[in-house]
Length: 264
Image (cartoon, rainbow, N blue to C red; front, side, top):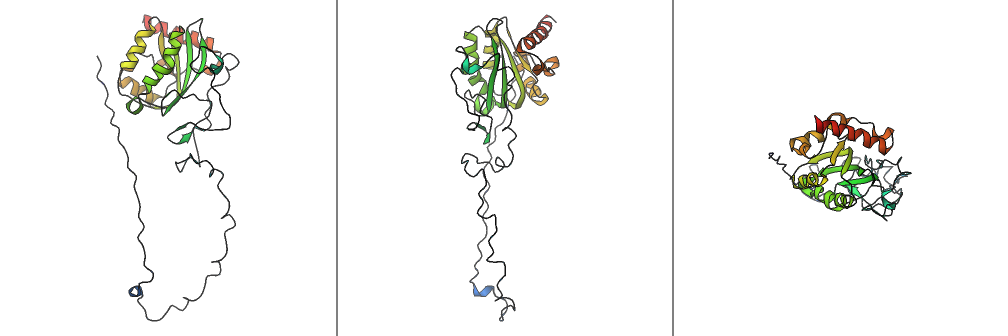
């Protein structure tokens, strides 16, 4: 039995600023009886209209952008799921996939993480801050490779529940019991409860759940929550050049590391 890590969720209110009103018609505000010698001189440029005043910002038509910096720079906008295995597998074309039949657009950005739009090739599965892409599934070898993007937040959104119910269980029904989770673009992790992790771990039986290339601070938060009991992480799994080969080679490499770990 491990001790859970409590994560306090704080809500941040909006600060409003009120500018003081100036009554320019108040006669008591005039300290002198004679007008300023330049008071009747009109500024020569007061009627000059700025040449760009009628130019509309190119993002002004995107009504869904609410964060002021999202129109300036969006670090998530260009992050695409890995696509060099699409000649081997496409989840939307796999009748056994939970994302079968899903349509994608290369030009319309509709999904977002904290008001930052993300690439439309990512798949939502119920979470407000975490998205994924099933890169490959082998029903013969009983493994899958899933890439993630965003914030893994069990505290606020119970992300692991959505992942387990809406994705993992579909794959388990098709015989998948070895899960390779790619976490290079998982930005943070917030823990709440380990029930779904324990359930997932118990159901894979002879399989395993391996976290590959998660960020160091995310690994630390996972380990602090004792989730490394249910999922393999860190060590050699955190430095795998998984893009350099095909998914079969990645599976053999991860499987060998898992076998060594289990037999140690």
